[in-house]
Image 1 (cartoon, one colour):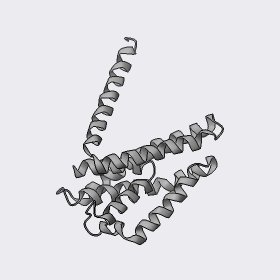
Image 2 (spheres, helix red, strand yellow; image 1 turned 30 degrees about the horizontal axis):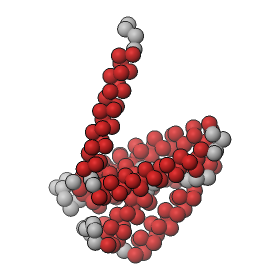
Image 3 (cartoon, rainbow, N blue to C red; image 1 turned 90 degrees about the vertical axis):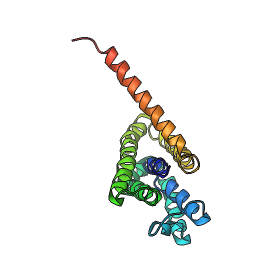
Image 4 (cartoon, rainbow, N blue to C red; image 1 turned 30 degrees about the vertical axis):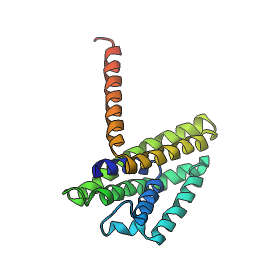
Length: 183
């Protein structure tokens, strides 16, 4: 279950690094989640305050069309790092896997989600003259909150969602291959 939780936290980290970080930090502080050292530092008050301030900055910066591009450049380093940190922090105590592999898995998952976000946002800004940026950003934030909550409260939903996406992509691939003309 910890691996599913870790996966479910790395995904929204690719959209907004600070939403799942803050959720894990508050969960650690409240005793709902037990992280081993050194990851337990996330639950310290100063860490929670820092993450909250960074979340506010991210929420504002991501809504402004010109600023969101610069923010995405900066977040290219932050979001995958947060995904790696979350993956190893949550799953390290439950699985007997080298922490470097857990970090790599989180970096890859969050980095992939971030890459998709960072490449589609300029298209949204261009096609909507910047008016779509706040709407798309708000939708991303809601998805990040819901995914984070699902990962923490019902990690099996992550498996169900991943399986559903796998079936969807497989069906799209089969349909695309069927639609191709024979050579």
